[in-house]
Length: 558
Figure (cartoon, rainbow, N blue to C red):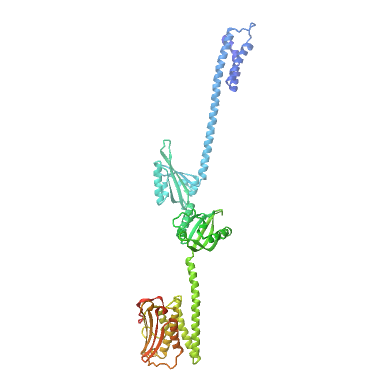
């Protein structure tokens, strides 16, 4: 006890040393131990005058120094452990905060995503659907469909693709497909689906992730684009597109065929390459500025054929190709081959000129008929009647000519028009001859001649009696330049015929007009058994080239 009593003063400094060590660390604790040892030995204890400590005090000082140093070491270790514990606690708090932030972020991403994100079990049954997925799939209560087989939401080929994707994910493979499926409210939509395995720690597929993206709008856009492409490819018009700098990047098949490019590469061609130099200048100086100013331009131009060099007339329309913001990306053209139109215009000009010429001739004939009829008339009523009848005959001829654009007239049709009012065709008036196409002027003269012959026959000849008959026959004799055309009007069964003492206008019209227009001979014979009229002309003067048929055009039964 005495020994412990001797030691006690040193240990009065222990709490101070502990505090210094805890607050300032191990080094400060050791210095505090040394100082407290000296203070205890030299100050608190009453040293002898000699300055030497007793052995007990030396022992007490040594024991104090040793135990306090050891305590300092323990305190240093404890202090480090406390710091490490604080650091670990702070780390755990940070990790927990990071996890919470990450989870909140992922939850927000899933809620905000317009994709339908689903988790399936290995059997393909629904176990989870993101909040955003429920919105896009129009799911009001996920609990109503949880556990349902996911492939059953697909129909047709989509169902087959979904089953294959689930099977592949079970085996560790990823897959994707495009299919059509309706939302829970029955809205049909197109989806792009990606299916992949969710692996466990052992690397095997534990669950299945399915991400479906609504591509209905994209699909509609693609369908509209496909329709445009089909429209452009099937069009018979030249459809092409070029960049802003004029380089071509698209031409449909009709365009390639029109200019003779076939399957050639067009990317090195520019707009100006498709035109002759003078037309290219018009495109550069007029068309392109007008397109930029007005938004479109249409003009008649000529493009060139790349193989033959032929200038091809076209109706050329150009317009800008823009993006959704209205920025010009290039130029487009729809160009129509105008060669047929040009030919039609030329034909129309020629036809108008020919019609004017024919009209002048008809008017001249009308004038001649009117003058001669009035000059030979004995009274006004008969003059009016004769003039009207002759103009009707002229009208019949023009009807036949109009049907053939005034280029020719079928002889059989012409005879039917001219003779039908005077007697029953096929019985009292018989037509017999091959298919023949008359020159226009010959057709007019013959129509008037047939009218005069039929009128005279009805008044004085074969058609004035019930037993009388008229036989109109024509034929082609020979071939080549010497071929002849012959037409005969023969009356039978009428009253006896006597040659008139005075030649009237009808006889003059019959002979002179036909001789003039056919270049042949026209003669009238007044036989006792009936009047006979004969026209004999060179085939080429009376008949339009290629206007004879090989077989007989017998019309007696008509």
